[in-house]
Length: 347
Ligand SMILES: Nc1ncnc2c1ncn2[C@@H]1O[C@H](COP(=O)(O)OP(=O)(O)O)[C@@H](O)[C@H]1O
Ligand SMILES: [Mg+2]
Image 1 (cartoon, rainbow, N blue to C red):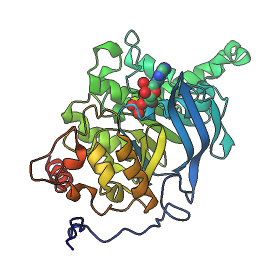
Image 2: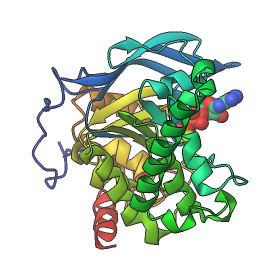
Image 3: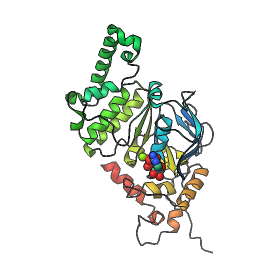
Image 4: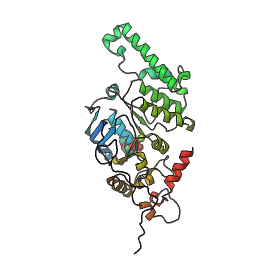
């Protein structure tokens, strides 16, 4: 009897099903040793469509976590829910041990959880500095009493301006300080948005596709900035299609599909997860990936149940030698992810 499904001998050793960040076995919804965000039963429906249906997820504190998945997986909606920009149909979640359900976005930011947007929200008709000052939290001048006491808001304003100038220098936007935000390039706007998020001295920074629309020349500095946030003690949660970024800066990767968390693990493990590779990391990983087929979602579940390990090879079984097809990701040759990896590593 011939066995046509023999796993590829090139697979590395099975990764351990435990991890230093995880309390218990690794898998979708696994408990973290030190979570900063814990979400339970979060559901968001739009009409008949369930955009988010997260049973349980925990974000590790002080780490960089990537949230990946095809377009329409529910990543942005989940960000909106966590940060109070949208309300779920059901669900509870906490940040630093305190419930955030029903807390509006400006109060969420005040508690130390800030986010940037997939489409930047810098205000074109304000200067770069004015945009920054809008990001400051606890502006004393906003309270009625404080607003009447000039020394209080004056000192606050000076402190905020000094902080803004520091951040602008750090993000190399200091020369643009007095320019209208509308005059910035796409990449500079992304940097401005990140800088503005830092005005409120957050503990958790959530970035929605920070690399989208960024000139490759700015890529490295953006990566360095995100790493810098972690070095400064912040937790980072980011959504990104750019697998170079995911691979090189994340400590942990969470995969969403059809609103659910379907896999999670360290990047090296997730990048070897066959179904994840086929679905997201093929040659077209940075373009619109469309929706996953049921079969792909099932495969991701199976792989996740196996501890997000390398699946013994759904891909090889179907390799026919007629080349890769984007529409049929399971036809992609197994070597593809590695080739793409190498090319990216050489960039
Ligand atoms: N305001 C909305 N009204 C109706 N449908 C929405 C709305 N926002 C998102 N959706 C739908 O919810 C699903 C998840 O979208 P989204 O969270 O933007 O996905 P992702 O960020 O992973 O690409 C998609 O099918 C999208 O069309
Ligand atoms: Mg999105």
